Image 1 (cartoon, helix red, strand yellow):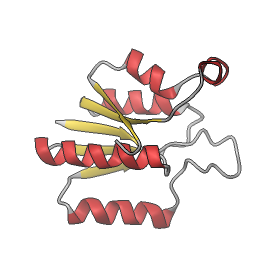
Image 2 (image 1 turned 30 degrees about the vertical axis):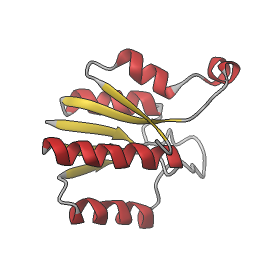
Image 3 (image 1 turned 180 degrees about the vertical axis):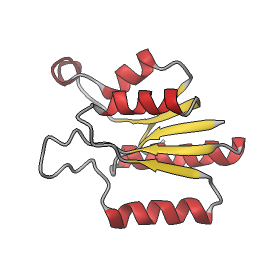
Length: 131
């Protein structure tokens, strides 16, 4: 059993990671953390830096969660990376964080969460920060 979590260093990403850890512990599942960057900018604030990644990894080890961290930089958007990981690791669940966006914002910028919700072949758990 595998659980995939799309993780970015934001309150929404932290909420998704926290819930994914709980689900992995409850179901004795491997947790696959996907943190990707398209690689089209010199600095991508969504890409987890080494010291933060070390803290996440240490937490997972301390909590006894089998895990794998993926940080692809292949020019793909985050939704495709999460969906690809879900297929490759035969996910039983995908966990994502949500943030509030206006309808116009979603129309112009698209929605990573929406794409994952519509295209995933397994259940998706969407978590709001502070929830």
